[in-house]
Each structure stands twice: as structure tokens, then as C-alpha cells.
Length: 161
Image 1 (cartoon, rainbow, N blue to C red):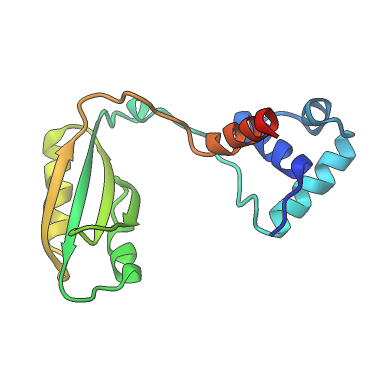
Image 2: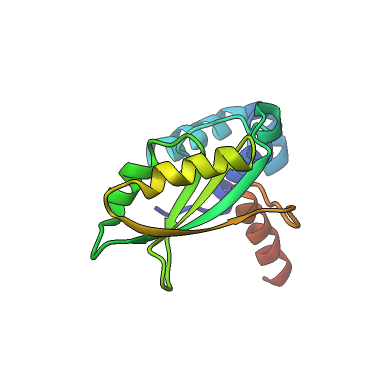
């Protein structure tokens, strides 16, 4: 999927505020509203834009505790099996396979430490899980919203290029 500078600028504008009108985005990137709409429709069609959503502060939902949990799995557990198992838990907000000793890393958000503990107990009960190793987040030092790197990369390349 090839994205030109205008596509990347439109995506950056949507990442900043997906509620902007096509006219507002057009003013920002130098296109008409109808040209922006056509590009957004094409970006959705090719899968570059997969949807629009609201970012909600976890604290607003009462989920003020977060943890990272390493999963150590039996044998050659497939990533798809891990994904299917952990997707059942709404508290798991992200999961990835990783390098190193562990097979996967889970990001969990919960009401409190006891809630985290219950989630980890349920995940550890999955048949393929040998053990877990967890850490509780004390405070976030840097918290870049998803998609912000697209915008930063665009600005950085225009500075150096």
C-alpha cells in the first residue's frame, strides 16, 4: 500500500482529531473537502484507515491500575492460540509476541490490584500457560497516543529532507 505525502498528512490530521470536517482537513493539507473525502474513502477501502474510535481515559471507566504480564507457554504454542485465549478478557488492552524467554506480553487495565490478580489467575489457568511474570505500573512517564508516531515521523522527515 503506497501512501503519498497528502495521504500521510490526512491520516495525521485524523489521528490528531478524527472529528474534524473534510473542509478543516482540506485547509490543513491544501485540498478541497471533496478531494479529502475521496482520499479518506480510498484509504478506508485499501485498509490504511481501519476505522474511527473515541479514546476514553481508563480512569473514566474506573480502571486506574495497569500491569504488564509476560506469558510463558508450553512447547510451540501458536500466537493465534494465545490471541484467541486472551481476547476473551476485556482487561487485556494489548497483547504481543515478544523476543526473549517469554512468549507473549500482555497489557492489562483493571480497577485495582485485586482485579489484576484475578485476571492473571484466569489467564494462568489457560491450558497452554506454564507460568506468568507480572509488573504493576506505578506511574506513566511518557504516554504517546496511538498513531502519534505517524505525525512525528512526517514532521521529522520534512525537517531533515
